[in-house]
Image 1 (cartoon, rainbow, N blue to C red):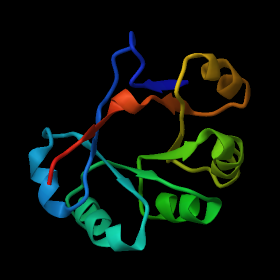
Image 2 (image 1 turned 90 degrees about the horizontal axis):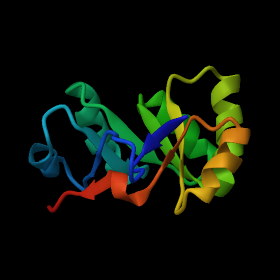
Image 3 (image 1 turned 90 degrees about the vertical axis):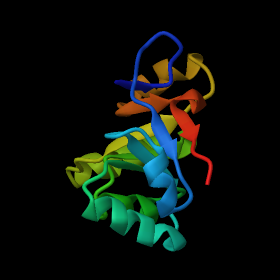
Image 4 (image 1 turned 180 degrees about the horizontal axis):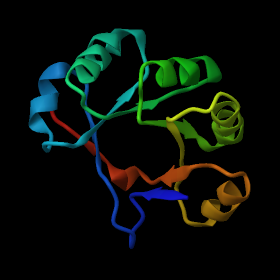
Length: 130
């Protein structure tokens, strides 16, 4: 299981941006985090063209499928969607890893039993000012 933002496990930080200009304010080699939305497709195209790793937060299975097709390294989902998202990812042999948003450590065991790729705490996401 992958852990992001856990209090005693070192992990990658994700930079939450809202426009292309914010990319230059992130650490070199950093992973960009953004919400999947049609209005963000220009940012996603920019990230892909510049081979910058990115994470997409999705709200449903259709968005999950789009995120994978667009080349997201990770997809974040709310906990209640995690099991279904993981099943789809395994069925279609996604390279994209599924991360479930969690609030406390007690949720880790439940998600481990479900076979979820990883968990993410809010501390793993750094908001980049525009």
